[in-house]
Amino acid sequence: MTGPLSGGEPPVGGAAPVPALVTGSEAPVPVPGGEAPVRLTGGEALVRALSAHAVTHVFGIPGTHNLEIYRHLAAYGIRHTLPRHEQGAGYAADGYARVTGRPGVVITTTGPALLNAAAAVGQAYSDSVPLLVVSPGMPLRHPRLATGLLHEMRSQTETMRGVAAFSHRVSSVAEIDAAVARAFTLFTARRPRPVHIEVPLDLLETAEETGPVRVAPAVAPVAPGAGAVRKAAELLASARRPALVLGGGARGASASVLALAERLGAPVVTTANGKGIVPERHPLSLGVSLHSPSVQGWLATCDVVLAVGTELAESDLWSPPPTLGGTLIRVDVDPDQMYAGAAADVEVVGDAQVSLRALLSEVTALLPASRGHARVPVGALRDDSADGRGRPERPRIAVPDGAFADDTEPARAARLLRAARDAETSARDARWLPYLRAVRAVLADDAVVTSDSAQCCYYGALPHLPLGPEGRYLHPTGFGTLGYALPAAIGAKVACPDRQVVALGGDGGLQFTVQELATAAQLGLPLPVLVFDNGGYGEIRDEMAARGDTPTAVDLAPVDLPALARSYGGQGTRVRDPQELTTALTEALRTPGPTLITIPEETP
Image (tube, rainbow, N blue to C red; front, side, top):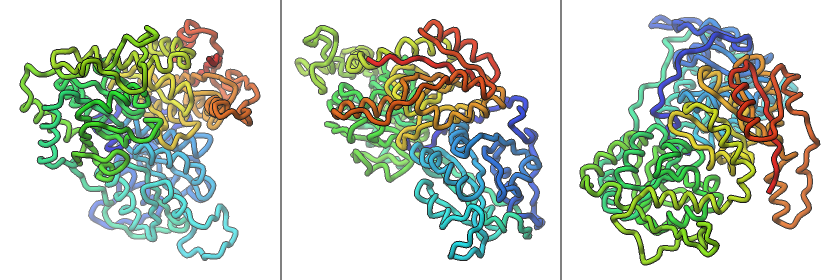
């Protein structure tokens, strides 16, 4: 996913009363440090800098080396949520960032605590999430040779550079402001990615004279070149078979891309992180289906493909980058994406919202009103296949009589593509569909669903749980970590206490971060956790079987997960059918704390 993650989304307001686990004040607090120099410790300088950048909430666990940071949080009006593990803190901050559009902030202590958060940092890097991790480091003049100091490691910064956009070790109290401003400049001026800032532990306690707090400059969204926009618009306006592919970087441009699709009569397919940017019940929407052979085959027949804010990556395609027969226009704030995977024929480098507004304006001027909605390949799929059930005869598109007529109905083309996509996997996906329909019927339009790297999520909910721009679906794409759903749901619920938030995953992934049930219970906010239980690591079990191997080390001993949830202070139950799930989910959404609902998974 590329581009600003939530460029068009307003900050979330209306904070709930502070639960026991969340500490700090909601009231705005003046930031010391006008024109006159002030004397601050490194810990206070760090908290002051966070507050100056409108940080109001952090996630983390206090430790021996970071107490000077914690000492100042409340005084600067910063609330804190305490998870049970630093990896949970990272995923919670990630969920917070995705639903608010504001950077998520994690505070760890040195050594193992920082490494615990590293997996979450890697996931945030993969998904272009603005995440700031701050930690103490070894003292300023710590010797190169190991001394046995608590939590000592060779280099925290070198380790974090492998998963973050950058890792900045400061060398003075005055430099802390600059480091924080550098991070927030990255979040707003370029493709947002996680950052690590390290403050030597002795510097945290040292008081130095500092000047006015430094704040990242306001940066206007990157505007694309007028020539590139004009060329892209001309291609789209003259295309007979246009298509739109949307990644997470297009989220801030939701209204413009939908208007453009309708103006062109172009079906829209999204990546996992682009899910719901256009309403998935819209007649032109193909949803999350880049992995479908039918959809990939159809894209190969399109004469112009507009890809916005997407890497066109293997994690969305489940295959190498697609072979496109027509012209590829890429819109992205990250110029490197023009050459990655499928190289762009036309490069529109700029913020998605600014770029799409400009494109829409140009296309509208070029395209006569009478030609809108008129040029979608309705004959792109045959629905008269040999078995009579609407399945394509081969992964590519069969086009009888060269039928891409200018007077055909775009919605019918998209409907045929959706039918072909679903027919490809109907036997496999049938186990989840009735339950997902029950979930959709209960959830509000603006609900947030967090998911894990689990079969019920990437095979089930991503293509089959329809959402629109009002809602959000948070999925760990690319890096593909396990254990994301529960802590990410906690972060989303902390950010949006008045919205429905539901975590969805499998029994294997849940147990990577299952201890965060205690966090959710202590917060006391309604949080259903739906778990499809297949007794282990179902995807790996299936892959071993497909290779002809004997499945090994993939079966987990049964765990009474509802009882485990109750032991943490939440609720737990099992359901046997979709009707029972409807009842249980409805009740869970109004019950304080987590409610873990297990669903036995019947494999095909």
